[in-house]
Length: 71
Image (cartoon, rainbow, N blue to C red; front, side):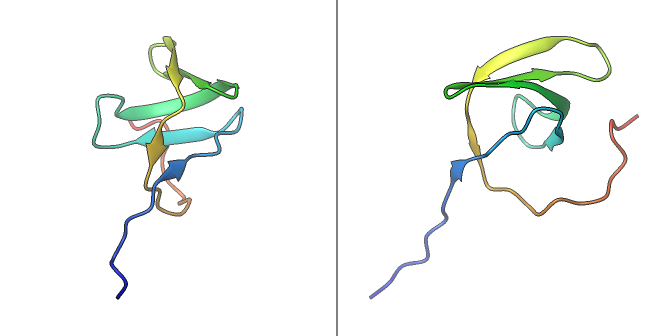
């Protein structure tokens, strides 16, 4: 008998991508400025601060047309 399973996968970040993270300590609008096998580097479009984090996984909705960054 099968089970309902939620599948998470490492998101395939692309340099130049405008993303929005919701519901985590990394919440906000970000610009992807670097990607390696192990890390992703994001820049806040408001403050200009940059952060490099280990690649993380998210359950992702399809891309949507949205205001970015949010005011």
